[in-house]
Length: 199
Ligand code: ADP
Ligand code: MG
Ligand code: MG
Image 1 (cartoon, protein in one colour):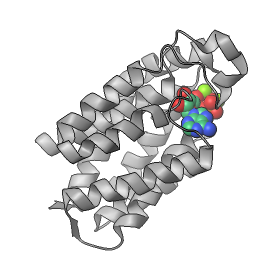
Image 2 (cartoon, helix red, strand yellow):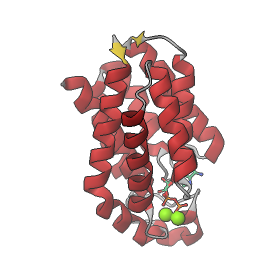
Image 3 (tube, protein in one colour):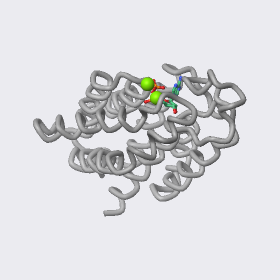
Image 4 (cartoon, helix red, strand yellow):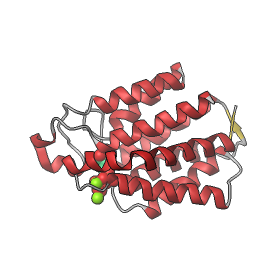
């Protein structure tokens, strides 16, 4: 069973990872976007880490909804509302249970990913974070390590795609040949979960 502390450690691991990889995320976004994805993610997850330290929520669901609210209010770019919705919808799906099973967490994450797809209107193959999150949640039935591998493969698989959503879609054919920044940061989120589960 997973408690609030587990989810908190996951999101803190993500904050550390984003901090470390911010330059790479911004570099990817400079090729097919507006060169701010690393800055956006760092600002958002720094706020998440601060809010979780100030007043640690007591349930897995509350940790996720608190983090999601921070991302929505602190990040100006598209990724803020999208990641914020992912965490908030996942948290809402978990409800107020003090501990949740891995199966319940997986189900909740599937709900969260569906909320992102609904908000952004993106489907797999559109060259967005959905290309990482959808296969990752599917692979979660085989465990956290499998999800991490599926996420990393999903992010890499965005390279040959033509973007159909977000800023990169303005480039049309010129978006081909570059890895999507949001798909890359989504793989960091799944990797942070897998590392936390393996601790
Ligand atoms: P912005 O594009 O506003 O500068 P960011 O650079 O922080 O925001 O985030 C860009 C990432 O957001 C993209 O790489 C993509 O993965 C994701 N994204 C953008 N639009 C959508 C959408 N409609 N649905 C899903 N993901 C999206
Ligand atoms: Mg950007
Ligand atoms: Mg921007």
